[in-house]
Length: 69
Image 1 (cartoon, one colour):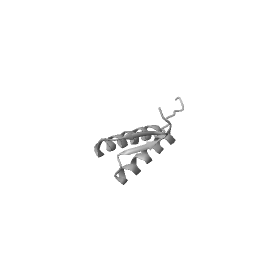
Image 2 (image 1 turned 180 degrees about the vertical axis):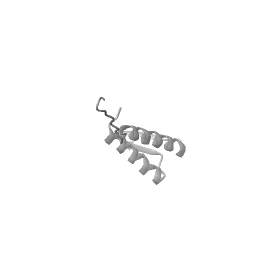
Image 3 (image 1 turned 45 degrees about the vertical axis):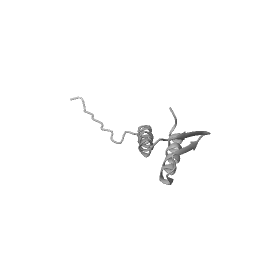
Image 4 (image 1 turned 90 degrees about the vertical axis):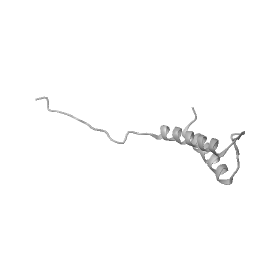
């Protein structure tokens, strides 16, 4: 699996191409051509899901203790 920086770079390249109306994206020496905007949207959703999964952190920790009585 790719690291967070790589996933973010791929997402940024894909978003830039999509907003420019281009269906071909180049990154890391590779070229990918998407058939439709829907296919690009699905790829973006997958990248966003992977990025969210890589950055999930525990936000609440609950501690319970007793005096043993």
